[in-house]
Length: 288
Image 1 (tube, rainbow, N blue to C red):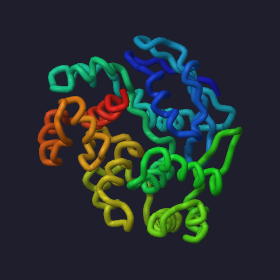
Image 2 (cartoon, rainbow, N blue to C red):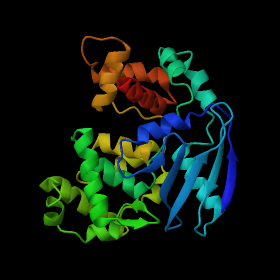
Image 3 (cartoon, rainbow, N blue to C red):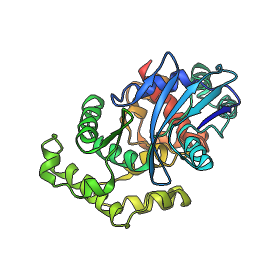
Image 4 (tube, one colour):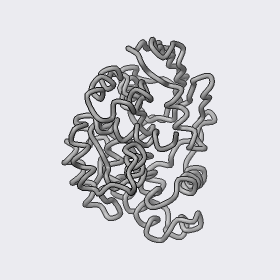
């Protein structure tokens, strides 16, 4: 399959790919603006090539896969990941009337990119809890390369069935903590046994998803918010417990210390309904 997708600019795919270089298993080329995606469409693992062939102001993408696939289902999944159906100029214009106007001028056109699979997103978010980024990605890499699988040279997360069959001792050998190993296995069992349907969560509100997820042992508010953002692609999340966002606000507003959570909630109320983009841009600003 080969298909071209034309978007309304701006769309800074280069910046989006730069953000993804932190993950050692993502197969991409920043300079050529190309990525190979390991995605699941209608329960089938697919390797999909996405290449930016246009410009920042007039983006044009080539979508290629050698796998047989329902094109409509594939495009729906790519829209979930890349938000191609939400013009970034609208986001930019909205924030020009807020205190983050300068930030959005600096990072204009930077897209919000989701994780490639819902299960992978939830596993990654649990694994990353309370870890520094370097070790978090190293631990995730060990998890994927030990229990996942490769297709056409691209790594996929293991299935929920595979992880549900593991013992805590097996994950401990990868340097998982006792509790984190239990969280990963127990959550995977819920999914494998049909008691947690991640696809079905697409049909629920943010609050309903949050309520369902935080009932699960090992999933707190931060984990649920990150899944809503990077899994389901919800656009109005602002995880005030996130250290990166706290430090991003501290840097942007030139504060002496990190803001109180109540103050962050008050500030972010002016950024609805696009607080996810505020979160993303504050993370990016922290790294500049």
